Length: 118
Ligand SMILES: Nc1nc2c(c(=O)[nH]1)N=C([C@H](O)[C@@H](O)CO)CN2
Image (cartoon, rainbow, N blue to C red; front, top):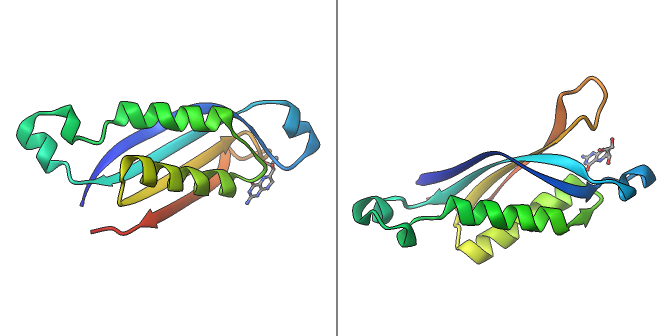
């Protein structure tokens, strides 16, 4: 399987379980590995046959900026389902980092893989 990559995509969200977190927006950083057959795009040099990483990045940003989850797990799960449905992505890996959420850790977060990898 081929992949399309989006790395260190940043967006701000209302995210967290504690009261103080419900009134602020926090920075999140995402790495996405998106399964895709890149050969049709490569053979035709046609964006219409590619998984458009700019379009995916814009959708991820819009989703996160409008979200208000408590757990990063829930955000990532719903984001994965949305991307797979809207962009017909058969398999993906999403890593989400929440920088500064834990003292003395550069970041904390989760990583999931969903779908069928050919
Ligand atoms: N596995 C998780 N643990 C924690 C989460 C989370 O989303 N998933 N969230 C918090 C708090 O919101 C934290 O980020 C505030 O410092 C704690 N643990």
